[in-house]
Length: 118
Image: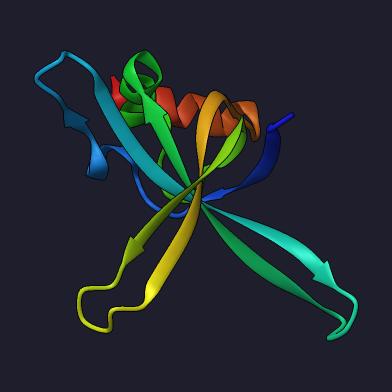
């Protein structure tokens, strides 16, 4: 089963990457930073995840997903493979396609966000 849940801070506003397609679909993406403990170095390490969001959720994300916001994302992990045009090297990246996005944080944070949108 391919399912993943992450909780972290948003790295960029989702509205920066919003796109509409001729088919009527919409898409945006944003990054999420997730901290984990590394026993070898006895320190926290930050992993960055790209989150792809489609259609109604993409429209929601453009309004509410802002840099610094604490979110929980449930989705599936996918990969993208390509050949670097400059070096000819095979490359691969991973991303999460969101099924659900939950805004986390205090009620005060949520109220400030709604007021900013209005």
